[in-house]
Amino acid sequence: MERRSQKRDETHVPVELFARGKVHSVMLVDISIDGVLLQAPNMDLGDGEAVLVRLCGLASAVAHVRWSADGWLGLEFRRQLHPSVKDFTLHEYDGAEQLLGALRDAQAGQDAKAA
Image (cartoon, rainbow, N blue to C red; front, side, top):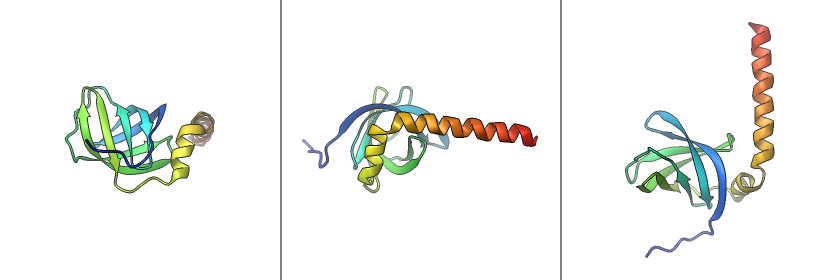
C-alpha cells in the first residue's frame, strides 16, 4: 500500500477543474502540497491525464489524475504547492471569495457604464 508523504487536510471548497478543453465546477474535499481529492460527479478521466486545478480563483496548479472512480478524482500536482497556497485555500477562502465577488461586481458595473 502506498503511503502519503504529506499530511492531507479536509475541506469543502468549490474549485475549478480544467480538463479536456472545458471548465468544470467541482468540490475540493482534501488537499496537501502534493495533491487533492475532488468530488467531481459525472467526470471520468483517465489515469495520468493532465488537468489544471484553480484554487479559490487565485492559484492554478497542473496535476495528473492518479485515480478516478464513482465521481471522485485523486490528483497529484506536477510540482508541490507552496504551503502558503494550501493554507490560504484552507483558512482564507470565505473572505477571498467575498472579495473576488465584489471585484467582479465592480468590474461588471464599469463595463456596463463603458458600453
